[in-house]
Image 1 (cartoon, rainbow, N blue to C red):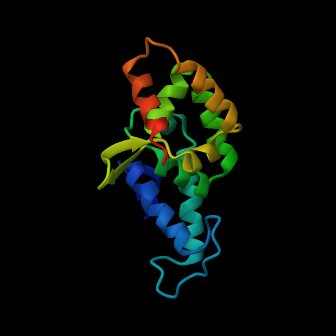
Image 2: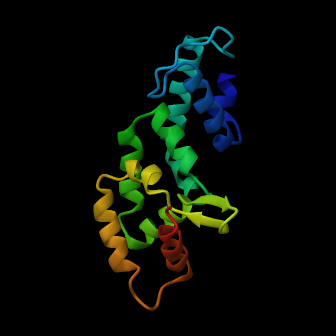
Length: 166
C-alpha cells in the first residue's frame, strides 16, 4: 500500500482515498473515534498520511494542480494531510498575479444542479475562502478586475461563478 501512496499514477484519486482514511480515524480536524472495522490501523494510516503529505509537497505534483479542471477537494485533502499553512503558501504563490488568481479560482468552482436554475458553476465562498489569507481583499481585487468591459473568457466565467454563490 505504501508503494501505491508514494508512486501511484493517480495522485488525485489517492488524495481522495487518503482523505477518507484519515477521516475514518479522526486524524483530519475531526473528532471521530477510530472504528473497529477500519481498513487499516491508526498507526498504518498515520504513516501513509505522512508519506502522502510528503508527496503532495513535491513541486512536480503541485505543478499538475493547475492543469486539473477541479481541485477544491484535493486542496482540502492536502490541508487535512499536511497543514493549512502548506496549502495557503501554495495559494499565495500561484495567485501572485491576476492571471494566476483567475486561473486558480476557475479550478475552485463547484458544479451545481437545481430544479429551479438547471446546471451552473459557482464559487462557494465558504469553501474557498479558508485557503486565502485575506478573502475580503481577494474579493475587492476581483471586483475591480472583473468590472471592465473587455474581459477574457476566463474572467467572464469567473464573474458568472462568483455571482452564483447562493
